[in-house]
Amino acid sequence: MENFIREYLRDGLIEVGDSEDHLKTLNESAESLSSVFANDLPALVRFIRATLVPSVDGESPALVNISEKVEVSWPTFVGVGPERKIPMLVAVGWQAVFEGINEDADILALVWYASVNAITRGEIDERVRPVVGHVQELGKRVEQRACDEWRSTIEKPRKYVSSIAVPEVKNTINKALLCATTGTGTDGNALENGNTNTMDNSGPWGQHFAKQASSAITAAISSQQSAVITSVEKVTGDLSKKFNVIREEAVRSHQAQNARTELLWLAESAYSPRFGCGYSELKGKEAAAALAVDIAEVAMGAAPLSVEHFLAVQTQKFVSGAEVKVETFVKELAKAEFFALLPESLTTPLDTTSPLGLFEAAGELQRQTLKAPQVSKRIGYAKATTMPVGELARIMFREIKCAEFMGAELWA
Image (cartoon, rainbow, N blue to C red; front, top):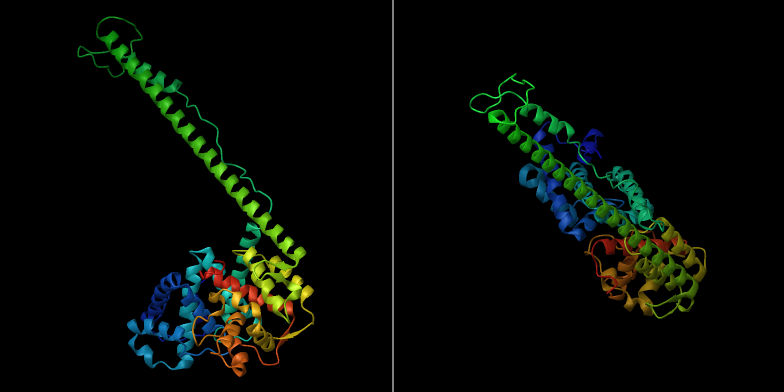
């Protein structure tokens, strides 16, 4: 994709003056930040959460860190006003994000799962709006990867093995023998244009012919043997590659079939092994969270949208009511008996300032570090916001996937 900083500059979203050095500083800061994100995935997620919001706060820790990087080579940047500074920090940060996904498919998936809930919520600062289209394209790439991994069929390599090639040695020998039949001088060396076509098996000519012919035949046989060995080694390597590809495809197909079977069994049994009860036994809307956790555990890694759809359908079976108030759902989740069985890394926020996920907000409520009146503001939904319970389950599923790709210990 096009350099994101230049895209912002082209569209008039940032202004760096007439100095190419300032533009160079922004790009170098993005490159440096990309390495930081690659080694500190929570920092990457914190940046995404700090920018995919209705109004970006230039004083958020994620943006302050970027500003400090820029100021190293652009000292007067500290005095730039927020209206001009924030778009530049956004451009630098997202350029770093997009650089990182080119190197690692798992980081690509992390960026998607960390972004998708905020994007579907729809309220994004205009200074970050250009990011949305690029992230949606990432979602298509994640979906394609997930669909490929979940295929039950085995795709065999069409062409890998080449035939063994036996080199032609006739011309090699003929040329050498022709040289051997030339006339020779008293010193025993061949004479230029001295081919008399007269064969004599004695004297210098005979010795010269025997030496040249023997050397020619030996060289031709050696060349042929070497070429055949090289050809056989290539074919053996090709066969090994083909076998490895088929074996990897078989393993992938087997894992995909297992996951599909487990999901079907989970749906038919309507029972959660993790929580030790049937989904219909869970109170209120708890079944939505339990299903999101169980299905995410089965569908490890990037999951196709069909898995999210499956989750939504199953949730509707066990939770009554067409629409659920998001704030109320979070408060009920915090009081659920099974909440203590959830992985702590799923319910613990990355920091105290970023928007919270549903699991994190419920965890903060339970720990009494978040007051009930603050819930709506911290999760980014208005107090009166309602949505189908199946959609809430999908939001939680993506939160789990984000934590998984961030490296959190979820299923120990």
